Length: 266
View 1 (tube, rainbow, N blue to C red):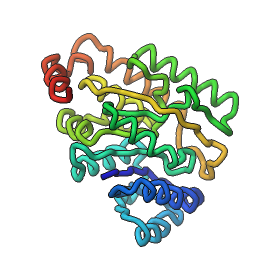
View 2 (view 1 turned 90 degrees about the vertical axis):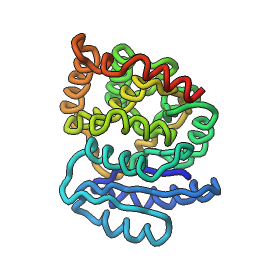
View 3 (view 1 turned 120 degrees about the vertical axis):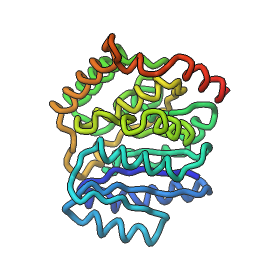
View 4 (view 1 turned 30 degrees about the horizontal axis):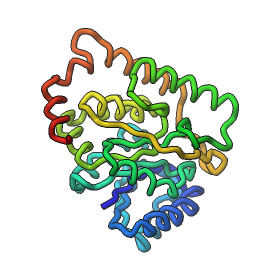
């Protein structure tokens, strides 16, 4: 089964365009699928649109009465996916603002099944790119990825900040079983959770790959939810927590656990 996770906050303008494309892409794969949307306190017509969509596709809604932010939304989505998925299922997470084209899902799934635990849709892989991104935003994005690559190096990865990814079900189940509520620990620090998941999965020996995609920022209808100052603070806090020499994240995972896991997946 393919489980698609969508965080949604006031996406009434984007969902009528995204959801038909998502249904078309998933139906074409001829596999069982399930869509889980976390409606994070939307005050527009997102609720009504989700009700309409649930009549046309297998859709489950997690509802936050108030807006809790991407960190808590991601936590709830991944914990729910871990509850219902099998080891060989594929978990896809993409944005709900129509900047992540569902047509790339089959390639992510194919690459994941070739022997990876996580496959990231990458703007920086050969053949990838971005449309509609201002020069300033593109520069900031590049700088952020350089920062992440320096402090959290993962072999073969060029893309760290894109949330469009495919995960092996067994990997997410193991991560949540190991970390518990701390799989996404920095819940209140904006988009930091997007990087945190990669770092936590790296620490338990996950195998990473990339697949080229084109970010369509020109299709974005809703306003940006990211607060740059909060996310920047989150990156700084995560760097300290990861590299802290006395009980930091790097020392929290026993080496024999990683060795055991690698033997299990090989």
